[in-house]
Amino acid sequence: MNYYIADLHLGHANAIRFDNRPFADVDEMNESLIRSWNSMVTKQDTVYVLGDFI
Image (tube, rainbow, N blue to C red; front, side, top):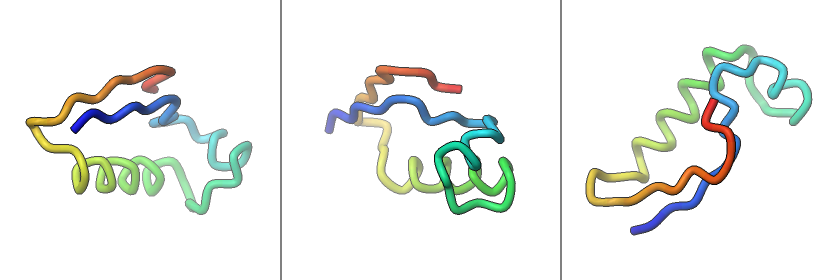
C-alpha cells in the first residue's frame, strides 16, 4: 500500500491550538498520531511525506 501524508506537526504544541486539535498537550497528540500510524502502516508499505514531518 502507498500512503501520502503531509504536515504531521509532531512535537508542535501550537498545532493543537491553531488546528483546533482535540488534545490536552503535545505528548498526548504525538502518542495518538504514532498509535494511529502504527495501526495502519506496515513494513511492506511505502509512505511519501509531502510536507513537514516535524
